[in-house]
Structure formats: structure tokens, C-alpha cells
View 1 (tube, one colour):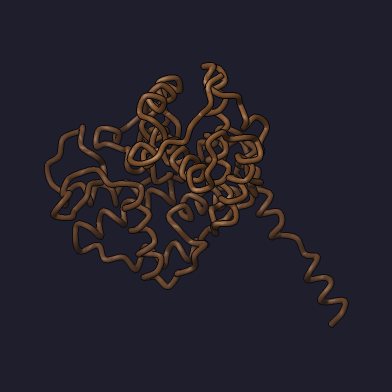
View 2 (cartoon, rainbow, N blue to C red):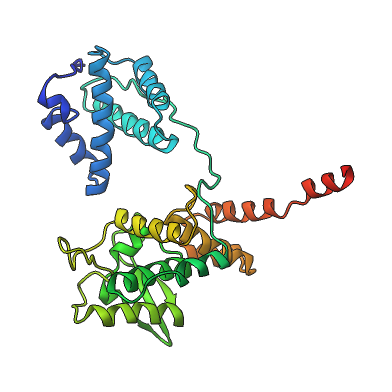
Length: 310
């Protein structure tokens, strides 16, 4: 097999040679988002090799790269993703007869399945929504987005992918068809209840005439007016309104609205299967994480200990 030589200069800044990179991506048949993620990971890998003078990587070098990622403050999920990409890359180089698979069985990072973000209580959700300025178009849009997220359990990616034409009726229900995480088509839908529908229709009415192919929620900024929002912009507007309502914890983010929807559904007595379907969890074990957290919150051990002592 040929040895991999870590190239210098402009080629290195792009991670790997264009030819090798293109061949690898073609082999993966990946989506643009996946290509972006893989490019970022491989750039970090090869920059690490270059800085440490590694021209013939060994298994120990891949493990050292993993440890360097941890030591430099990368999140466990990022470390896991980068090592996953590294394993795929070297598996491919071995298959192509280019270089041995020196990353085989190298472990990434241990991912804690417990929630990193908090949910909101029903009272806190009410505080956030009631404190929003709905006199202007941006406020109407943001109110509709957050109401939809907390009543429908939407992810930010589902919010930005929604089009005007996805909002309609099915039988006697108002629904919104969704393109979920990892999906190529809008094969799922959620029911839209009266208050949420009212919020969305108020926003659309203020927005004016639109085509069904246009995004359901659009930018109001002069530079991007009418264009589709990004997940980052949805995260920003959610965080802004949380802080405005007095909830500035780092554990409260846009995902907290989805987290709240699932939590309140379980608290209301809905079954795990019902909540799994509502939240569009591929695996019920994900839903069970929420349920386990609620069961832990009901544990009275600390109260009984305190009563026994004091």
C-alpha cells in the first residue's frame, strides 16, 4: 500500500487533496450537510498530523488526536463525530488500497445520554409567550414559531424546512407536514391546535400574499427579507425571548421548547408509545430518557432523610 503523506500549503488547509477528498465523498454518497461535517473533521485531523510532523499515521496517532480534541475543550459529541469520520476515512483508504486502516476500533468519547438542557414549566412557557411583542411582524413570527415548537415538539430543522404549502387540513384537523431530522421527504405531520393555528394565521395575514412554495417562516431582515430562516436564527430568537422573560440559564435554549413539549406530554399521562409518535423519536429508548428523568424527579429519598435527621 502507498503511504499517506500529509501535504503542506493550500492543499492542507482544505483538509486533504481535492482528488482524494472527492473520491471519498463520492464513495459516501452524502448529503451537503454531511459533506460539510466530514470536511470539518478531516481538516482538523490532517492539520493535527501536520503540526505534529506525522507523515505516516499509526493507530497511536489517531488515539492521540482523539485525546487532543478532548484536552482542547471539544464537546464529547464533537469528539465522537470526528473519530467516526476518521474511522470511515481510514476504512475507505484500506478498501481502496491506499493506506492501512489505522483507526479501526479506536473509541471516540463517552456520550452521556442524560439531557444537557432543561425543559420549561408550563408557567414559564406562559411567561415567555405573554411577554413577546406581537405588534410587529417579527414578533408575530417569533410568537408563532415558539408556540408551534412547544405545542408540536418541533426541532429547529423542522421549523426552517416548513413551507406555506405544508400548512393545511387533514380530515377535521389542521396539520403541518414535516421533514424531520435525517429525512428526505415530508412524510410526517403534527396536528395544529386552535391557539397555535391562530398564531400562525395571524403571522401569515400580517406577512401578506405568499406562494405555497415559500418558507412558512421567513426572515424579516432587510438583507434576507422573505428568505428561509436558518437553524441558528431560530436558536437566536428563542434564546432572546427566554432571556427577555428572565430565563437566562445556559441550560435553556431553543431545544428546551421541544424538551418541554415531550415532558408535558408525559406528565399529562400519555403513554410512552403515544409520546414517541408525537415526538417523532425513531427509537422509544429516546422517549424513555425523558420518562426516566421524570421518575427521578419524583424520588422522595432526600426528603425522607432530611425529615429523619431534622
